[in-house]
Length: 351
Ligand code: SPD
Picture (cartoon, rainbow, N blue to C red):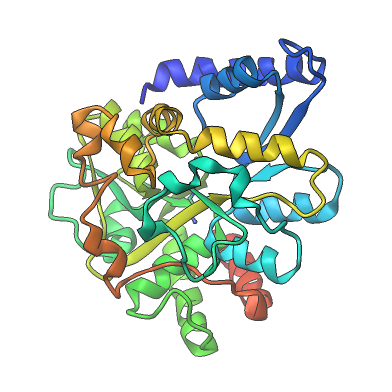
């Protein structure tokens, strides 16, 4: 987890991607078209994959599940491997957009811990191969927030006006408001969702910015007091600034699993299988997890991590956390997506 090296390396990824498109380091003519979250892979891993297999990686990234879905649905680019979160996998399965996997082509699938298999979005392990997992919580700067932080309420505290970063994502922001109110993040109750909207509108004047990946460096640089963050990003921030802490609020939060899937219309199926299998190899999964800060679902990979990472409560909280009823995984809100979209439009226009 090295901020400065990571920034330089991500430029190399783009450079390598450009070269990959024009055929750099690859004589086989084989390629795999990968679309992943930003800051969600060690660029060296893509290079190693090409060196070992001769398959070039045409790599690009997205900021959130919704952006990925729109791009894939538009059909402007045909992707081979995607990394959606659980609720988006459920939606893509329901829309018949994903290929059923032949797990015999992913022998490293057996390395994945059983507790990350047969999850509600893919109960028979037909479509998705877990990649990274984690929780969502609050990163706060102890030199500014010098009181115990244990509740989402702090993100509404006027003392911290214009020192709060929220995440620029409708699903995650609405989740925070629902949990603050004591509701399920998967509620279909329009009254509860209206209350969540009112909370977010109330919070908007206090928010310094609705950020994406750039929020991490801003927190590291002490530009805000509080930030809504995923544990993997928290790992990176905490390693760079000892004044920062991560907490999962007592009202509960989101526990997520991002997985690798192959779209039904993928043009390079065999290469997609090879790529997914490579990322599940314990040494590669460990290298990747150490670089990006997120939590690998492969115990053998976790064992290879530095002591301070593999024993971190932030990246690897107690296993009970995934059975805590206050910690929820998102499910697909397609049936009420217009309500979600309308809430988010109103929140953003009030900020
Ligand atoms: N840098 C972004 C890493 C992506 C993390 N995914 C979290 C998904 C939660 N629904």
